[in-house]
Image 1: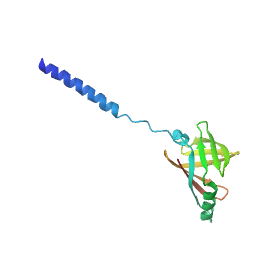
Image 2: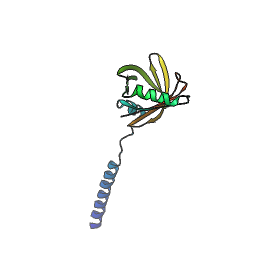
Image 3: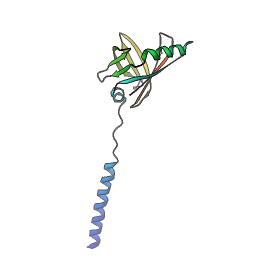
Image 4: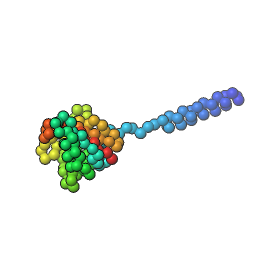
Length: 141
């Protein structure tokens, strides 16, 4: 009889322990790329221009022009981009398995390749037809 009580107690303790460890091992699900993109306003932190004869000049000019700008991607696929205190409205959609953002503003669409997207960094790159080079923007929040 006493052995049976020990066995019952051991079984009960094992069950409680397994429930405790199973409950503690749950992790929050990773945010989706859309959740990362739309979670906050992105502040401009840098730009690099490559593929032109005047990469340094364009990088400096773009850095000065976009300094202090903020970009927001909204869940309704609209954007708000404040550049030089001027608000610019646009639209965005994902394409290519959420690795490319199609950004449209004033009827002009650009395809932005997402190089990095984390909870604190957004880095996008696109072919800049106005300078015949590649422009890479970095934003943080």
